Length: 624
Image (cartoon, rainbow, N blue to C red; front, top):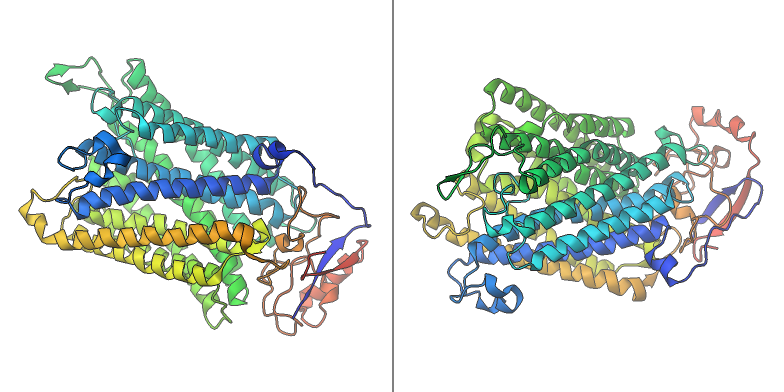
């Protein structure tokens, strides 16, 4: 049954902000936040394919160490030996670039850059970002960063190979290994540009949320997605400059003879002149960004999940204030737990116990979020859309990966498990896979608003189940072999009799990884096919309450053709007792829903009389 959507205007003035420009100003150097979001998304998908391909190459090495990989020579060139084996140094470079690409270029820029840009103005009722030019600049600096990083994959000495954490002295000495040369320099340049881009975007997101909310949109009426994007931007603004400083000091050590991270280094029996530096200083600086980074990629995914779970459960989100409070608590605590990554660095045991306590405390707000998701789902009238399945998958990964984090948060246990596959499994589940599912969830849910068409649900279901089962098939066995002592960062295990017993399990993990990666081709096809050939969307296909669904199906630059709607209620009025429909959008005045109003909401009606309210009916079949 078609439902009538309502726009609230304040006097009938038609503000048309659809700027008619040429190809370059519309699709390339656009200042429209929606186009910039699409640019981030397409770039993020490209990087996800690159990062996933790198992981498949090194999984082939790990799962089939005796296989002839000569067939990869047309792709990898000299990095495949005459015997058909992967070069050991290039293996380290693959691991380094895979981690860098997935953490920064996919799950930070691809996820946060896409949905913060797309949803913040639409959900708070703004024409655009606070600064359209700065927004455009942030994307193009990210694009230049991407070009530099991509170029580093093809240089003669190979890309950076110091691990995605680029610990010195390996990263500080150009002569250490091939990947410490030009590849590492390009890595540092690309990351410096990336950080500048991220900071420009973050300033814009914060300014937009604080200053550009529509009339009635108080902080207590913000969708949880906006809270998540806002806090993510704050975390990035405070933590990324620390990584920038760490990288700058590393450049000084590499190129200008300083000794911030170097001391008493011998190469080939010859002592280097560096004195007084400490590589542990770099670890502190890196992880001061590194742990907030976990929540820079997780919080947007959790915010998206909150919106999708409430919409498709047809229930109000359980504990809105507790959800906001837990995100605030996570944002604060994320800055004071960084040294749990350094339990094996020789830190004072008392200091280790302090960080252990703080690490275990941060599990509390995370548990609050999980509890609230589960109670929102409980007895809900659930619609199992592909977006909803990916949201539930995120909750599953957040639980299973979070439980293993409690083990690693205990310093006594972490010292035994730190350099094993247990850690790899933990952070891939709780950060990598959960955030990736949040990104996919958001794409499936807001694709109709992005492109005016629907993705194919059947392909979405196949994509979900292959990916969900595949992820667990990859990372569950890693927990087991990690507890058994299987070390990470090793190129080959065939020389160790103790580890040969896990050869079959390692092969199983590699096959599962290949299947899971192949399943993403279903999404790629569905995504690009649906942009041009998908079924046309209605104005509000999910019957959602937030403001983005009050815009035309294909909103122009400026989002609303008339006045921006005013907001009267919170975004989660689903299945309200007495209501005519099971959803009441945020811009519907209380005077129009007397049958479902609570006593305090009836008191709000008198405030509406101060406004010159005009009601315009919009048929959601055509969006006019």
